[in-house]
Image 1 (tube, rainbow, N blue to C red):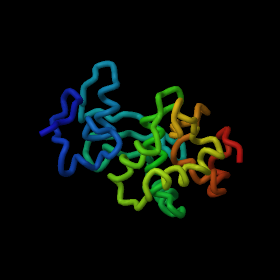
Image 2: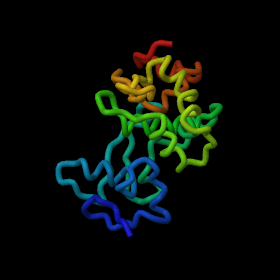
Image 3: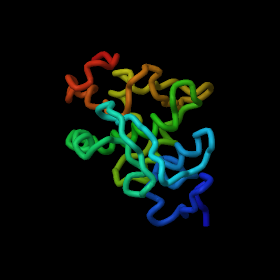
Length: 187
């Protein structure tokens, strides 16, 4: 049975550890980020300072499993995302791109994204569904789409604009834009 690859963590990658749907070789976002620290070990007593994907406030990401995959600072911010039509689905999709396909990376195809989104309880109709969902985010500059050389496949990457995070998806649809007026995304 596979275990988390972060030194100091012995969680098995099955059962409750499958709650981490983005990073396959780590049990949680906490362990993924711990492995990127200079000592590359998981220390359950130490929290990692993160920026909320919605309101840009900082919070401490903790090892206990109910906090280890947290992307928002509070239930209020999580509710902002979930209260939008398709908010949870879009937030999940954008989080995958944000964390796995930053600007300058090789990116993810719609097929890669469709496979990853199967882990979530959303009903997306394959590759064409992913492409359709991402159109407004490409239009508003949160995600870039480029043609794969020698193919008709599009490759999606996160924008190179600083300060844009998955929780800012409301900006594309005119929701809570006054809260995020400091970002450089133009509507």
